[in-house]
Image (cartoon, rainbow, N blue to C red; front, side, top):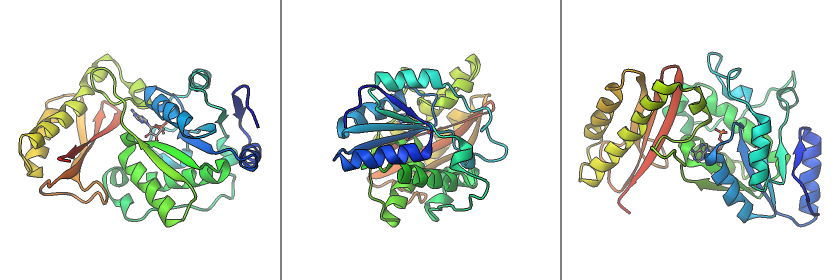
Length: 287
Ligand code: AMP
């Protein structure tokens, strides 16, 4: 099997058939699931993915079931033409872009819930979100049949949840995680950055400034989580356009709160800038 040009597949059965044929031909499949509106963060996953196997599949699917009723599903930025161009530059073989109606027909009724990891961070502020994520990723894995799938550490809790799902359900896929790609000034790249106006874009930098403050304190010997969290909160609260959802210092595997940082911790936050909710994180480590 050789692919001379990038394929765009919208039909689920066609995607399944493509992947079955590829496997029969002895090819490995690498998969990067996305919601489109691609940026350099996504591109970093594609570049790495291109090196890890024979056939690189990227999905573009804004998954309705991971959005709450008051969230931005309808508004979520979509730009298929631009996304296809970026996919082509990054040597994607297949873009899978299914319709929501085909993914979730009227009588759809199954869900996957990773029960404990769901009860932290974004799982608290966005009830049902990770159930929607786990369910769609499981569906996409069944359709695309990847050997390897790549996910970004930008969505750290999502990454842990996908890894746990794969382990618990004995899914035959290796999950590879990739570091956060940032703008030149440090803002983590995100499709939702498109919502920010000029003032909000400037204000959004407070997330990274707060994370760097936390990192700096840790490397200067502060291990008391509350002391670090308070300084970080002060930075965010000094920004009039920002409103804290959460700022947490937690165990990198379980997401349980830490009172004291021994060797390693996840510093994670979610902040609303105007109407836009942004997340970011950093791993603190002595290793
Ligand atoms: P999304 O389109 O936002 O669902 O993201 C698709 C994948 O790209 C997920 O695995 C994200 O974690 C990853 N991703 C998004 N933004 C970044 C970033 N700034 N750096 C690295 N990976 C990212």
